[in-house]
Image 1 (cartoon, one colour):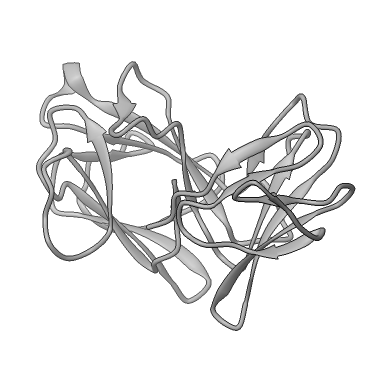
Image 2: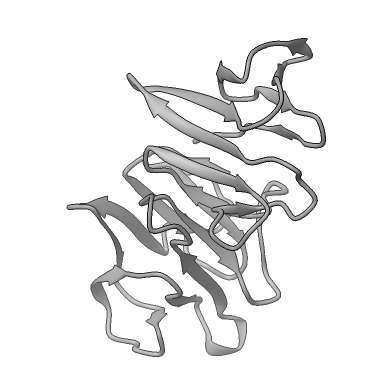
Length: 185
């Protein structure tokens, strides 16, 4: 899931009007915690039931690369979420569940998008795709989202196009040895 907003909540899959939401299939409140981008940093805000690198004090805390967030109503059912900022060239970050839980709606991982997102082989990519022979970059220009391939032309919604294409929510993108659907919130 590609999150484009500055503020997003983490909670159970019950829909709520308001802020975009990262839904986790677990014993969580509807709005359990909030991640906010402010002053070039990510911040986690909660009122209770969140441990931050083992510290159970609630409030507002800065997130950094590798931070483990534990959310849940009880210790035995805690959801372990790792916050990663794999590239020093971009403020884009990712969230991955480390416990036996899962994101709702078939989501594999969450990308907190900030101007650029790197996809491809290698640990410095926001989305690691080991079998890809080329890198793909999502970037924002004039409040529009674009995709750039470093090697091949991109097929957008089944139509061959250029190496750089403007994309929309639900777009199907494909290159020589890769394919994906964009789902943005």
